[in-house]
Image (cartoon, rainbow over all chains, first blue to last red; front, side, top):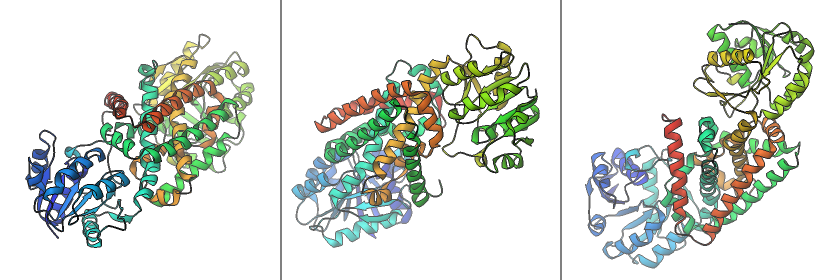
Length: 289
Length: 289
């Protein structure tokens, strides 16, 4: 299906894409590039890439598909670095968590003869690194694509074919709409989780409290284990949408605080509403868990 | 070990205690009482109790150990109801999530010849009901006991023996200390989770957003599926400690909001600190997950 695919950034996502491509036999050659010490070697070892490159120009040259699988903060410099060596017809896509800013950079830096299609797989783990890469990571996941009116339709088809190979389902969204939605269901939950972890663990009682913390605490704080640099980049590139959600969230919490302070006997009604919302979501989207 | 144990409230916790007692052969007879339609019959059917009672006085009469396994809001009325029929030497314990208020009620209502020992197993599921009861629910969990200077030491030993039968580990705490700690690692995480669920699901974008929400969202909102009445009772009986934690939490979130608004490039440092705290906790307390 692909002659030569280049994956830049060989962490959980990049490594998993490589493994899935190989498993499906969908690329004649998979080239890889990663700045991290020993990461490319490890990716070769587990079969996520066929060949590791130390020079990004060499990695990209001659590829029909280039996948940027780094935190969003690295994408700007990478687009600048690869722009001069892209051959006509090359399709570039990314997997980063915010799309509007990335698309602006692509329009600014990529040559006319290359096409950019913004992408974002709704998959992940709270752990990162090529060590935990998994060919089935994207199976049955939603994979957002955010083409604009300027995006070449053949390029969109090419990335959609990649997504099918990964076993994921394409969902087309406007870039700004995407960024608003994921700010609510992904970036806000991370902030909620990291603030919870900091709140309890910064307290002088944490030594005793940590012994009592159980499965509920574990789940509520799981996202706090996420990659700090990735989430910094997300905050820097999606601040408006995130702050909008944070304001609504803080306001909800403040309401709850007032109801608790005044011993509101009917506070269970708002808990019951959220319980129902959670159960409906779970039943529709994750019925087996 | 016990002649006759009475379990009042046959939900997840009460039902699981019954199953664990039977599995261990630790009680000659297990009596059960529950107000819910069909709940006692179901508990009998799965073997969590030997005999179901419709009258609470009959259920309690002649027991050497009475376990109140209801939401904390029901405990006051239950203590009043059982007080007249308790025989000398009967030990009463509870499993509810807040302890100071319950102990005040026990001191107010129980006769001198009965003993109360407050308890709280740090175990649970986000689903409730006797249908999900499990003899191994308490295995290797921490089980808090909160005796006071007035508590009979033989009674404490009796409840400690029950906990050993369940496969849990006893941890002794002062009642107020207990309430402050669990407010941070259990009640606050619930509020964080229910407010998150409400924030995103009350928004007009939820129809689209719900399709993108994935495993991170699932974990961060899992506690929102908890029993609304149980959490109402918790809020009503532990409001001071909960509001203290909520204030710290809201303040942390507001700080994050300010850093995001001003595009702070070093925001990853606070994420990295929380990540480390989470990883340390996980490694010390849940190394296998």
